[in-house]
Length: 283
Image (tube, rainbow, N blue to C red; front, side):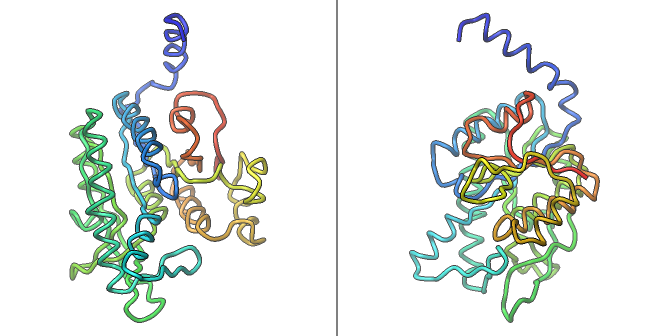
């Protein structure tokens, strides 16, 4: 690209940079898109670019593949129900270690190296996420969110820090709960009245046929989403993602997208161009 083309490209982004400081964007990053170090670096570089352009970013991350890797090392078999990890007390210790102690701090470190002032949190910090057990069975440490207290997020954003949130919740007794990261991202977006919620995942978006990327649904409203849930098109790990998005839409989040985190610069294309990336969800 020559210099004139670079200038033209910069000029084309100007309409998307109006009043960025008033726009809070919640980005959920997870799935197998996190397992490739080069891809992770590319995604975090794009997030850093958006932050340096003035967008207020809250990054919520998952870490399922890394958790499964550590469970395998310890000869503990992962268990799921309806796309949600079943978590006993022993597994909860490992989940908290991997999410809060490893992945969260790795992401904060990468952002710091890119001149972004990032602060790593879990839902236990400042009682950001108060939760209860969903009580699928005795000793299950999978949590359902009761309250999101956005105060600590607001303080960080007002002082130009980027919150990086691990999906661990707590209760008044200080117990830890494993909460689906998609649910956490959706609930935070609703509570803080974000202008946008973007789910970065390892599929092109919502597909009619999971094995066929060209069956992408580019635009879906609430009625469409409910039909796809009822007819079994949306299943597995996509189910909590879509349930969270539906709630966020009803709570007033105006722009929601599920996009492919493996696609180079999918975030920048989504926010700084007219390119149609992933599935756009609306009321």
